[in-house]
Image 1 (spheres, rainbow, N blue to C red):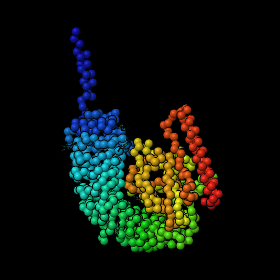
Image 2: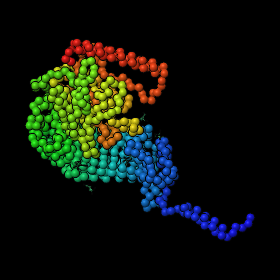
Image 3: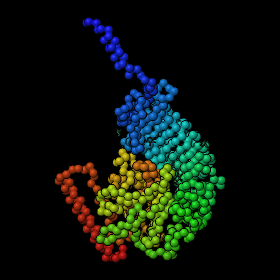
Image 4: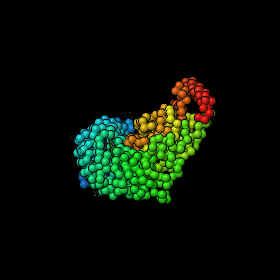
Length: 615
Ligand SMILES: *[C@@H]1O[C@H](CO)[C@@H](O)[C@H](O)[C@H]1NC(C)=O
Ligand SMILES: *[C@@H]1O[C@H](CO)[C@@H](O)[C@H](O)[C@H]1NC(C)=O
Ligand SMILES: *[C@@H]1O[C@H](CO)[C@@H](O)[C@H](O)[C@H]1NC(C)=O
Ligand SMILES: *[C@@H]1O[C@H](CO)[C@@H](O)[C@H](O)[C@H]1NC(C)=O
Ligand SMILES: *[C@@H]1O[C@H](CO)[C@@H](O)[C@H](O)[C@H]1NC(C)=O
Ligand SMILES: *[C@@H]1O[C@H](CO)[C@@H](O)[C@H](O)[C@H]1NC(C)=O
Ligand SMILES: *[C@@H]1O[C@H](CO)[C@@H](O)[C@H](O)[C@H]1NC(C)=O
């Protein structure tokens, strides 16, 4: 082979150098620690999750480009500072309802400072190996199905600053070792099966800014666990079995939201004067007594003192300009200076629990289009569903004087600076009912919603509650959004963790509840309330709590002739695309069923009309 001329050689050498240039590594971050990379890979593999296209399997820290959205996320964060390799410090896998367990390899990621596994479907006990993650500052496993005890080993997580475990089936005593997490600023434990009392040594948690405990059965808690609340701005202790308020209440100078609803607090309301500066004050369903301090009324954006029977005093007669947001139903507060006498009569019925001696007219039915405008059903016998569009704010009620019913609401989300929509509506087509518009509006609440019919003649009644989920479309959110709430009628629980979507078989589908009840004191009470369960924030922060589309109450004609409930015809499923003979026969059957049930219904209506022309 002939030697190449020197100039050509030089040129080639130059090209080679130029070509090699990009391969001289530019100063870049070190690669991921090999054991972290292997552990993460095993975790993702067990969960059936794949890395995005920009992630190098051996170097997951080499990209920041993790796909994710508010509703679904599988991503890591790393720390590469001052170390020859990058360590995985943040792991966030949220919004996968098909994930049912934690892969053991996860507990080898010992440099984790933040672990967010919320909104999955994780079940079983929390593994004791969690103690290996001793650097954790953030640990969120809310909205899963974990059960069993919180393992004692988790007491070693002394660096925790944020612990969210709401909406799980964790049981046992609320563990005392949580008091070891003295750095904690944000603690949220509600909607679980944990029992009270709240340990006294929680007083060591002096860095708290947000404390949300709730739904603790058993145990009589006292307020001793709040010693120094200097940094607390959100304090929610709904249904914690707290009895006496301390004679020297804790000073909470930064408080903006206080929820003490559904405890057994038996103090003078005057003691709450200290918290009059808080924007939202919920102390309903307790035993507070004495006159309501006017400073509490003046400054608040939402004040709930309802159902404290011994609470009295006058409402100030100079309400601030903005609409008052106060709910004092079920108290002895004298509101005669601000509301008309008919309304007062009706409200007194709710407090006194007997109405006969008051000047109400006897009624035998009532119907409301919750959250919507008046709607007269096109049945042969028209039923008027009354308008229910009044804005109730963060706490309030509305009295329908003519038709003698009351709607009452309390609740706001501490993390959204608004009382929420209260009434909602949709243009979504509601299938499987002949009254779709009834379901296209609804009233919601972040805590408690009650409807009362007042002055009912005593006797048996049929109560129909109409529901359709029109806000949380879980299909749009990978199946992660869940609304769960409880329903009581006449103080009897009839549904716990009621899930409209599940009952109805999907989003935007109707489902009804029908119950026979007895009224013996002229008042019928329907109470829908949140019990800490379900998702908080899908599709947006504050999307939780009871929702109801309409209510109808009427007298059953006779025990053997109770009316057919307006039960929706089950809707055809969307993905059923089959055609032909089978579908044709099915359609004929459905049509026949609809026609025959309509005939029965018409017949019944006709009988009702003949027998009771005023029904
Ligand atoms: C869970 O769902 C995700 C997204 O649909 C999928 O990528 C993954 O493979 C599933 N995992 C399992 C264990 O089924
Ligand atoms: C995890 O990701 C979700 C969705 O991006 C986000 O809302 C959440 O704050 C993240 N968790 C943590 C602890 O950063
Ligand atoms: C969630 O887990 C339960 C068992 O705890 C299982 O029955 C259900 O199918 C799971 N959901 C999904 C979407 O995989
Ligand atoms: C947890 O840590 C212990 C010792 O600190 C170790 O023996 C064990 O392998 C770790 N577990 C996991 C799952 O990494
Ligand atoms: C309140 O928070 C500040 C800063 O976050 C901290 O310096 C202070 O110690 C906290 N107060 C108490 C009583 O812990
Ligand atoms: C509520 O407190 C009263 C005393 O104020 C007590 O008699 C009653 O047993 C308590 N109720 C519950 C459920 O703890
Ligand atoms: C809430 O809004 C009011 C008025 O819009 C404002 O004065 C207040 O500072 C806000 N609070 C928070 C916590 O954002």
